[in-house]
Length: 393
Ligand SMILES: *[C@@H]1O[C@H](CO)[C@@H](O)[C@H](O)[C@H]1NC(C)=O
Ligand SMILES: *[C@@H]1O[C@H](CO)[C@@H](O)[C@H](O)[C@H]1NC(C)=O
Ligand SMILES: *[C@@H]1O[C@H](CO)[C@@H](O)[C@H](O)[C@H]1NC(C)=O
Ligand SMILES: *[C@@H]1O[C@H](CO)[C@@H](O)[C@H](O)[C@H]1NC(C)=O
Ligand SMILES: *[C@@H]1O[C@H](CO)[C@@H](O)[C@H](O)[C@H]1NC(C)=O
Image (cartoon, rainbow, N blue to C red):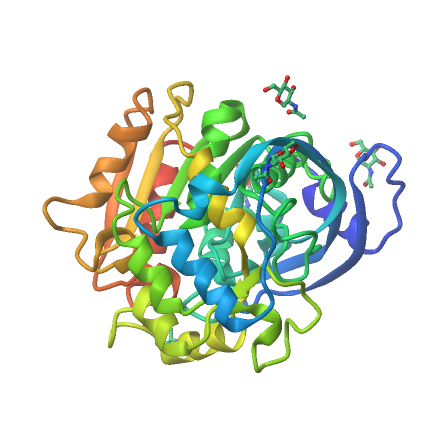
């Protein structure tokens, strides 16, 4: 694994031929992580996507009253939108620009020894910054300190990445295709010309759902997976979504999303974000305020299709780690010890053939967004320790 760092500089300075790389990279910049302890290369990678999607018989309304009615119909007891909107399949196709951030240990001697990369997939209404909130709340810094590289990114329709049609294009299967394409580029050493021996999938919340879908559809993509902010229970998702008071993002007073079409949604208030994602007083208010200020979007297309990619992964035989906030509201209704440890149930339910080194962990006093809570450091150490104890480093 010599010369990793050489290739890193090589790409950063744009002095090398990219003839061997099919990935089209652009706007490459180099700088420190937000936590300050890693060096990161960020830019855009163009991914050609072609995947089966769902033809949705749904036109997003533009008034706030009609959009609210859509949410009522999404969760109503009979004839919900998830049952009535799908009308056959369609191919989702396009070349999409996806924003990525590849981070390494800041010490070049340590960076040269890196052999494993972790592909970090964020949750809904968050973006790549979830993994690098700031000092003491940066999973990226915890991972690079332990000698790993990380690749975080903005999902399709999120943050700096392309924002195509939020109903017919930004759906669960296109998100899975993007994540799979990134895992393949890492496996084939086609991002930054790195060669990694192992790729680990790490997800949070809806990002764990996508990571799980990869282990079902493409079990060879990951050597191990760490699923955070998830469980086998979706009973409390509706209440969490309701707390958000989702509105068309283009009507958000911040003006950040004014150019997005209807069908891109965001939370109306910080109260809803706290209700679903945080457990007072066990979180860092700076991290909370930053998330509120930088809240992102979700699409009706993903909301209507995400359940469709959830399936058991009998062909995945690597180790699985499940990390859930002890007081996660979205996936445990606020108490993940009730009626038994909810993190302990995920691997048996979805991974009948997972490696015996599989683990689970409840993050003390944490709400849904584990990285923003006071116990983040302990959670990060559990995640790193899980990989090390399985010989993946
Ligand atoms: C990538 O690595 C190959 C061989 O390891 C080398 O020939 C090529 O020039 C490198 N490309 C970049 C962009 O560094
Ligand atoms: C879409 O699904 C059909 C049948 O279900 C399959 O034959 C086809 O290969 C799929 N297309 C893509 C792009 O995955
Ligand atoms: C479903 O799709 C078919 C053919 O694509 C179309 O004729 C029909 O009108 C659609 N149904 C609804 C309810 O939109
Ligand atoms: C890199 O790996 C070599 C060989 O295993 C080891 O001797 C060296 O101490 C490592 N360097 C760092 C900075 O970890
Ligand atoms: C990070 O945590 C350490 C140890 O708990 C503490 O001393 C330090 O002040 C924290 N730094 C920030 C920026 O919160």
